[in-house]
Amino acid sequence: MWRTLIIFLLLAIHIYARRTSSLFENDEFTVVPDSLKNFNRSSPHIDVNKELKRIESTCLSIQDINYLTGGTIAGSIAQQFNEKLFRICLNTIGFEELTAMLEVRPPDSRWYCGQPFEDWCYCGWEEKEAAAKTIQEYFDLTAQRNIGFENYDCEWFFEEQVRRGIAFLDEKMPGVRHIYRQKLEEVLLLRQDAEEVFGKRTVYYLMDTKQSTSRLLREAMDGLFSNQKCCQDKDDCEEKERMEMQKNKTWNNLLGFLITSRK
Image (cartoon, rainbow, N blue to C red; front, side, top):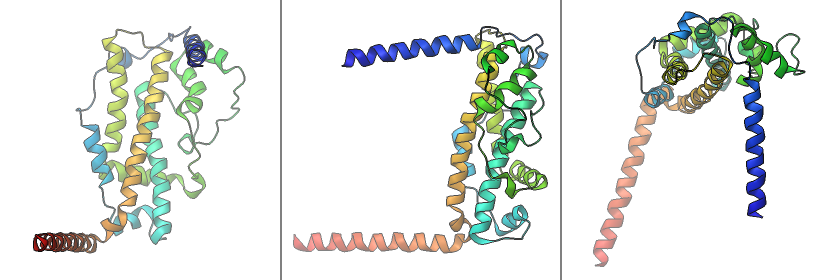
C-alpha cells in the first residue's frame, strides 16, 4: 500500500513539474525596465514579525473610527465596516507596490475589489501566457488567477473611502506598505544572487509573494480588531486585568496556607 502511495505521489510531482515548466517555456520578455534588471533595495530592512506584532497591537481610537466611517455608524457595525475596509485597503496597497515595482498599470479600475476582469476567460490561458511578450501582457493575463482575488464586499464602499483608508494605514501603520515592499524586493534580490533572467517565472513569484504577504497582514488585522474592545476602554481593561491577577494571587496564597497547615 505504501509503495503504491509513493508511486502516485512521485507521479503527481512529475506531472506538476512538467506542467509548471511548460508555463515558463518562453520565459523572457522583449522589454524589461532597467530598474528590474539592476535592482536595489529602496527601503531599510525591518523585522517583519515585530512589525506584524506592532500592527496587531494598534488601538483604534473613537476619533479614528469616526474618521474611517465618516461618523455615520458606530458599535459593532462600525467595526464590521472597518474590518472590510481594511481588507480592501491591504489588497490595494499590495497591488500598488507590485504594479509600481513591475512598472505596469492595474488591469481594471476596480481591481482591488476582486471584481472580474472584462472578457475574462480561462480558455487557452496557457497559450496566451506563453505568447505574452511584455510584462504588461503577462500581468493582465495572470493577475486575477494567480493572486487569488476575493470579493471584499466592495458595494459597501466608495472610491474616496478606500483612499481614505489607505491614507490612514500609511500614516498610522506604515509597516503595512513597508512589509509588502520588503517581501517583494526580497524576491528580486534573491533572483539577482542567482543571476537569473527577469522573466515570467519571476513575475509569477512576485504575485505569489504578494498573496502570501496579504495573508500575514490579514492575520495581524484580525488580531487588531479582536483587541479593540480593550483598546477603546483601556483603563477598564487594565483594571480588570489587575483584579484578575489579584484574585489569582489570593487563591495561590490560600492554597499555600492550606498546604502548609496540613503539614
